[in-house]
Amino acid sequence: MFNASLKDLSAMLSGGKISSVELTREFLGRIDALNPEINAFITVDIDKSLMQAKLADAMIASGRAHPLTGIPVAQKDIFCAKDWLTTCGSKMLSNFVSPYDAHVIERFNSVGAVNIGKTNMDEFAMGSSNETSHYGSVKNPWDRQAVPGGSSGGSAAAVAARMAPVATGTDTGGSIRQPAALCGISGIKPTYGLVSRYGMIAFASSLDQGGPMAKSAEDLALMLGLMTGFDSRDSTSLDRPVEDYSRDLDKPLDGLRIGLPREYFAEGLSADVEEAVRAAISEYEKMGATIVDVSLPNTKLSIPVYYVLAPAEASSNLSRYDGVRYGYRAKDYKDLTEMYEKSRSEGFGAEVKRRIMVGTYVLSHGYYDAYYMQAQKLRRLIAKDFSEAFKQCDVIMGPTSPSTAFNLGEKGDDPVQMYLSDIYTIAVNLAGLPGMSIPAGFGKNGRPVGLQIVGNYFSEAKMLNVAHQYQKLTDWHLKMPAI
Ligand code: GLN
Image 1: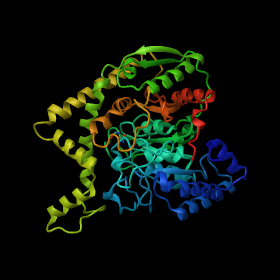
Image 2: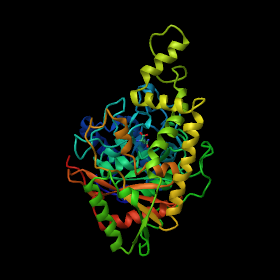
Image 3: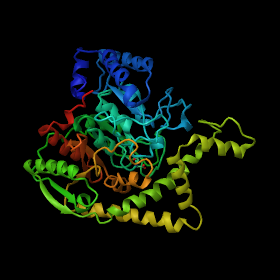
């Protein structure tokens, strides 16, 4: 049952084989057994989850079920959930019980999905290893010495260890795709603007995008349909009709043109990751796809551009945490200025402070044109690389991450090395494009490898089709860590 698809779980629920209360208890039991070691959840609230499960059972009994009714969903702790502690992985919000629901949480609640707990994450979603969390690092279920990736590392580990059938994540520079790759699960970051950011704690607003994490593309399609849709409370929410993302899953792939960017198969890519990714691509050729050589010449600029723009936006977004209205406030201070200073220096961790300092610097008078404006111009060029490439191909494929999961502590003292682990994912956010990662085997250390699929704007249904066809032929997505 822990390996069952959403479709199967949903059929079990509507066929009366199991109730949502029973299903929720099963997953809570698994969390109870595994979470002390994996540390994927920050908050678990048995009573609240079971209360939702009871409501779901009533919905099912009255014949009003949606495929996600009664399904336990692990929610990244970046999504505000009414009456739940919502920390964003930070001491700054360690006492924040949200008075309202994020759009994404509302959508899950509206169909009677069960919030099974709030997942651990890098502080304010800044990181690639989950090690910046105030709540301690998450262990990779495949190997406890390894990081799960970040920032949605708790969600990825929860699904990989089957502590939840599905989870939510957010992706500013790779935070859905990279942890999905490192934990051997599937995840999709939709086109920017498809999933409302209302109630999703802001990091870098022009890049942040929520999305689903699950075992398979088929499960992602069901979740994505629920999470998308116009929301007037987010000024960048797109007013488009909601799509059925499952509609094309079974389409054959003959004639599909897959672009392989030269720059993604160059120096810095581990041999074992390259081997697994190339093997996956040859499966696609067997399915009738053709391979096209493409170039994304500005790839090397994506990390420097991101590390100007994301900190700039973060420094502005995080100015709201001042110890006055909500969140952490220092105990002793002599005046207002000292209260601000102490609350912020005690409440934020080192990586968050580093970003605030960089962001404030690049936005300051005299440096704004040299750094921020320049980065905005380069962002356009990076987006243009993709539009040129999509003239020649339908999807772009490559590795999600340059290596399999690295060891806990391995990159902690070297922020630049940590930043480089997002080299293949960040440009996708800068361009606002959809990107996903699916499991494609294991590296030589037995840790999972992810295949990245990038599509043109609004091509999520096509990407899910491409991923699903591979998952029909292979069973990497069904492999479970021995725990
Ligand atoms: N690892 C990147 C960062 O540290 C991306 C994080 C994210 O996507 N939230 O900013």
